Image 1: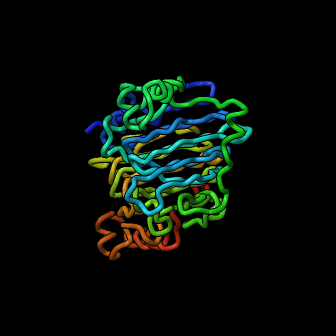
Image 2: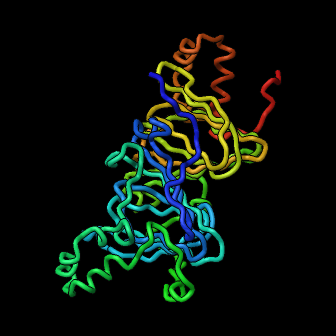
Image 3: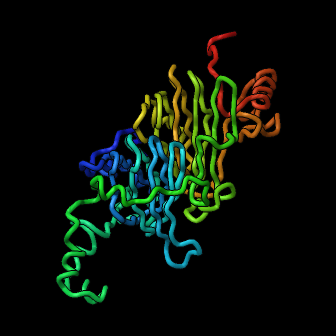
Length: 361
């Protein structure tokens, strides 16, 4: 089974004065569709406004840069239906499928948000499909004026103005007067977001880096989406030991560069290449992946398409190889001395490995 897992940059979906949206298309990498995951990148310029919309995929947003406000309206059967949320760098915000959201940059610098999602129910395999409510491609503009008039109990002239006054598509830039009319969102901690950059790491190794995972237990809103989010920081020349997950994973390189290897079916090395900031790559379910940072380090954000995935580590005390000594020895076909040394290294090792001299005796 040949599978192209090559990392790549997004293509431009839409660009306006207010910002842009960029997506990773399944046409560029069939692995997205096969793994049923999707990704996108939203950039909002100051006073940039993403018109109200919903999507066919549940996803999480990760704020790479800037501060912005998000209006989120959830399906009517939820307890807390509406929220106006303030986001900052490092924040994670889950966005359920079919929920309506709009995004506004009230700051003086660009806002950059990466979306990683589960495309299992997507119209286009491996992609997020958006439905806008207003604007030139919005639902209001598509219905005939008489239906709009009946829906909102207004005359046809007003219905036409409601449907057709907004000529923008997806992202617009507000005028100064319009911007002043939008309130600032609350910056207080909410049930809707968590800052993964500032959270206590699950693993932290001196000169190696840290790994922080948000699960449904830590972040109940994630449980509704069935996703699991991990932030990985690797310091200079550090390595993330090989591991696998029971469900598909999608990684975005937020900073720096390094090398990634992925092993798939029949022990075949499917990917052995450099990755750099701005690229995304997919790891299919049960495939094993390992990463090493270059001299400037590397930071990644990723999701697993399950809120409670089964994972397997190849290194450290919880290694899947850490079994009965005699079983391990015959499985590896090594001497008792090397087997004992290997077991000792597993017991004392970590899943994040600081740089080392690979050729020392």
